[in-house]
Length: 156
Image (cartoon, rainbow, N blue to C red; front, side):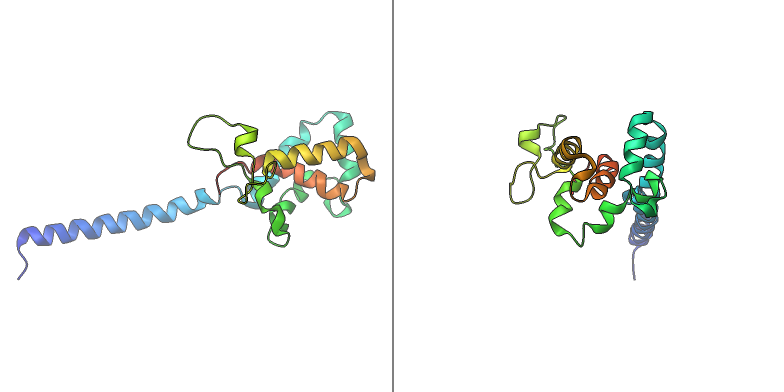
C-alpha cells in the first residue's frame, strides 16, 4: 500500500506532466507563428513603405497571379524550398551563441559553402536585379524571394 507521501508525489508528478503538456500546446503556435499569414502581413506593410519608383518596379516584376499585391506572393520561396532543395540554406542564418553576425563566419550552408544563407541570397538577387533588371532570367522569382527572405532569419 502506498504511503501518504508517495501519493502526494504521484499527484504532483501528474500535475506537472499535465501543466507541461498544456504549456506545450500553447507554445506550438509560437514556433510556427510566421507562416503564410505572417509573410502576407509583413509584405503588405512593406509594399506601403516603398517609394513610387520602387513600387512601380515591384509591380513590373510581380507575376500576374499576384495582381499587383506583393503580399499574395510573399510566401512563394517557403512553398518551393522543398521542391528546390538547394534553396533551403537561403532561408536562414546560423550565428553562434553570441550577439553578433559576421558574414564570412556565419553565411554558409551545411556543407560549408560560403554565401549560402539568407543574407547571401539577398545580396545575390539584389545584384542580379540591379544589373539586369527585368531581363534577368526568373526576375519574378527573385523579387518574390527578396520580399520574403528578411522574414526568415533564424536558426534551423
